[in-house]
Image (cartoon, rainbow, N blue to C red; front, side, top):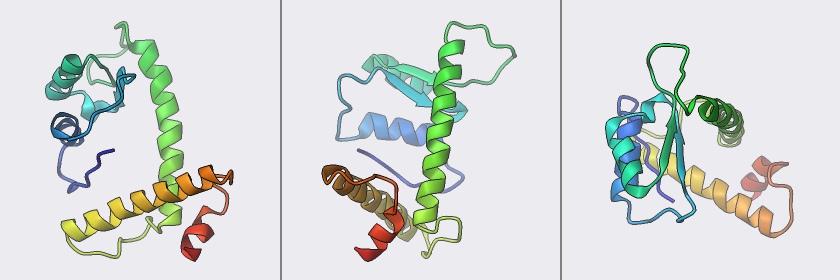
Length: 146
């Protein structure tokens, strides 16, 4: 896994490209698609995908209606992505009080806090999975008790 938290004025697509290109990790060989929104539809990310034999599935600006061969695939995948990511965002923010201002100052401290929260969340989900517990129900009290 690789992650980064950047300042709001940094481009998501370029950050993703850096993580995918320079990361010391590799994605499993089964990966065939990279799914992202319009910010990920940039030349450098498309080039990385071509080199790694992945398909970039990302919305793009331009005339409507879209008529290219990937239109229907993007529609289905982005609908699923939207449901999954928005539900996760709300769930995560409610657990870690992410709707309010973060309890840190500065990019480095905020990075530690946010990425640490993601790590703790993943550990809690792994523990609950391994013990056949519901993955989402009562996760906030579970973490607060830990």
